[in-house]
Image (cartoon, rainbow, N blue to C red; front, top):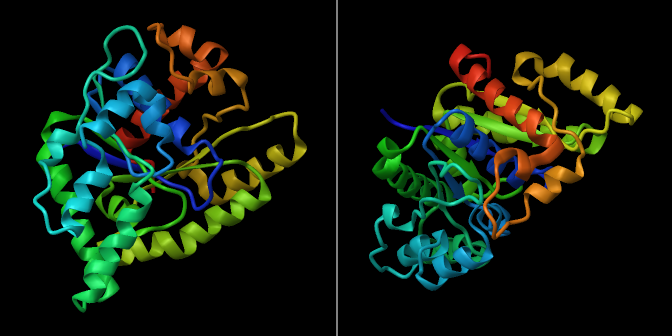
Length: 290
């Protein structure tokens, strides 16, 4: 059975996108015994370091097993390593040996897209042909490992890039974490009006959208009012679970050299992260993401 691909994206940064990606992967792996692969397409590499730790991530870079090396090989007209060789299994600092793996990113990945565009433009390719080429390479990589996992979670870079579009095209569902404030809502509106419609036009069908409110402060009247607006506009696409602004969530993102239980890692945030995994599975199973 092929893995379900979930692409996590937002037009703006600072919304807890990478934290959401890692915590969702961990609760799926620990509490639901799912086989999970995290693909980090964000050159900021936050998800890679959160999930694997700086030392292990550094070793992956030294071994040329990060996504920048994989795609850069195409730009240099070299034969890339098999996509499967990028995957590092047995990551996470959690007890219980969760079935959690990663295809890590690196800061150099931000230059790969530019290099690819430059190479193809010299050959006379149009931007649509370049996008199609990237889509095919990304999809082929996913197909080569899809049977090994239940879920492939893709942490996309902020905004819409060629690689982010490839991840959205390949996705079975798109998850957008967003802070419930006016500026973030404008970014969500822009995403739905332009980027999502573009993806749907190219896919030839409606993309399954899920929206998650993050960094929520219920004592803040603006957050409460924005959550009401989001609920009215998004309906069942909006998670009932809300990720609060908790220091324990920020601490959970820090790698620990000592393995810890899920409760030890997430502290006061444990119930909400657990509920996130449960509602996520429920949405997929009941087809509520629209």
